[in-house]
Amino acid sequence: MIHNEWRPVPGRIKDFIAIPRPNLYQSLHTSVMGPGGRHFEVQIRTEEMHRIAEEGIAAHWKYKEGRKGPADDDQRIAWLRQLVEWQRDMRDSGEFMSTLKVDLYPEEVYTFTLAAKSSRSPRSDPIDFAYAIHSDVGNRCVGAKVNGRIVQLKYGLRNGDVVEILTQSGHLPSKDWLALVKTSRARNKIKHVITRRSGSRLSRSAKNIWSARPAGLAS
Image 1 (tube, rainbow, N blue to C red):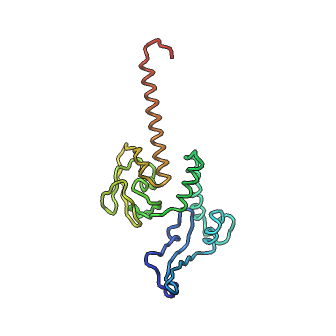
Image 2 (cartoon, rainbow, N blue to C red; image 1 turned 180 degrees about the horizontal axis):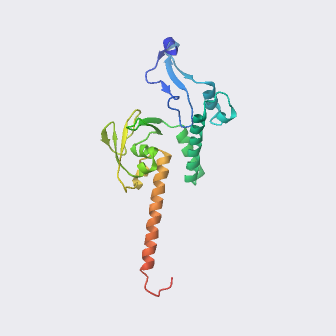
Image 3 (cartoon, rainbow, N blue to C red; image 1 turned 180 degrees about the vertical axis):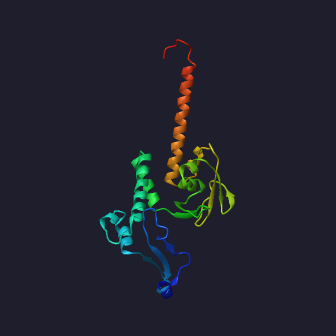
């Protein structure tokens, strides 16, 4: 009806209902050419979607009308669990808040696996995509194909790309990856592996130094 009344602006139709934003915002957006050649945006959503848009995720528990079933709760709880995971991985409260803002309001890219499973992340590359699938996939990532073509790990993914991650058993992430990744999940997982690996090396070095001490030498 809106597009019959006003001419739509190409490429400005966004469906955040089929693919909700990370903070569970849902709405249909379309930009149209109004009177006098002026653009304006129309947002279409249900009353429950509007409450969440205006008041945040807490509106789901504050208002009970229009509930659609346990699947909605599962999605919201999964998002809260992700917040808890970020907070546990980050000791710096400032870094946590910065990450939260980035992940709530990203320039989002929607990509897909070969099995048509969607992934959503801000300005992501294949490494981010791999960690979005599973931490083990990210750790073992050695390459990627995008739309059937091999690309570099720093390749910037675009909306609608179909991504295949190439993995190798026993492979671990490089410290250089920290300069490439855009998502907090990938960055935290990489740091965790690097820290654990460094701690293991220090432990082995200390053990070797101790075993090399001359017999009878006091510690």
